[in-house]
Image 1 (spheres, rainbow, N blue to C red):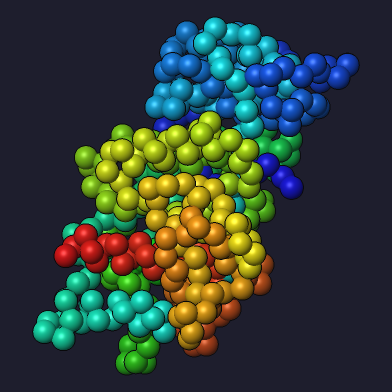
Image 2 (spheres, one colour; image 1 turned 90 degrees about the vertical axis):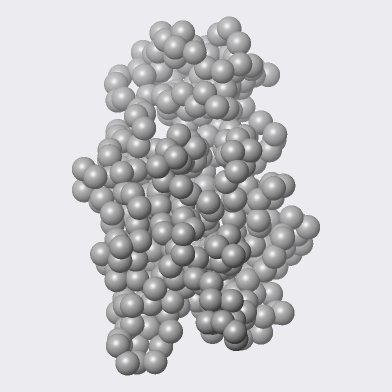
Length: 405
């Protein structure tokens, strides 16, 4: 399985392209070091983290560049630098002062597979005295995903910012050896969700339902239809494979962006329908450290449990963390029946509908082409998808209603 992950990167500056002094693979097999993961030994270029025993300094960055590592990004909150380099400079980095190890930058994936009534959101939203009159108004939800189609009528006037572009735009060769970071305001994919996953997820959290035909009687609104959104685009169809097209460092940059800009953004809840491919040591995993730092600042993180069911013990990371809300999937017509695809385990906090969920469809969504979405007859602005990706935004919407209350 590729190490490319479903995606998250950041618009804060990163990777400069340049020829590495270590471009050629070593003629002999590299000697393993206790400080470097074995998966980083071999031919080719690797995505990795160089980890330190204290905050990263400019001198540390200069030392890495001195080894020929030009494509890098420091994460000072978690004492690590994300790099792209061959084995030789990665091994050399283990000998630098204060370096505790070099580990793989894991791949991540988007967790794909009458829901409001199943979770009683219709009662919370109903006017008083029958209900509570809650709509999520005044609450802001950040969606770390494939973007959000701001032209969709379901989000009109409720997107706070789109100046973050976290997806690497790959040149489709050399495993993304040529990549760049661009501002969302200038990117060719600005405020566009070519994949369709993020728009569907956000719509489930709090789409207004205005895209449905007037007078049709259909209610396609989300759980909290008056929340505001911050869209953090971390995956792009331009990267190639829909489910396997980003890196762990992308998510870290997105979370860091939230922490650095939240006085302006005012985000309360962070919705995450993605997971990491492999985790061997959760305590040392940089993205998990970054999430903990954000939780300590007051952010509420909601994660999908993953689609590796039906066996027990299949909840993925970061959903397996403590202090996050981890959501499994039920069948909406049988709310006490678990979806067969849903991951299971003691880390699950709650389950919500995730099978055949109808929500907003972005323009030209490639999910349609992958046969992972079902069109809704006579309503081209909506589609149905199944997965714990669809269950977790129900919970983010419910948390938004509670925050408003």
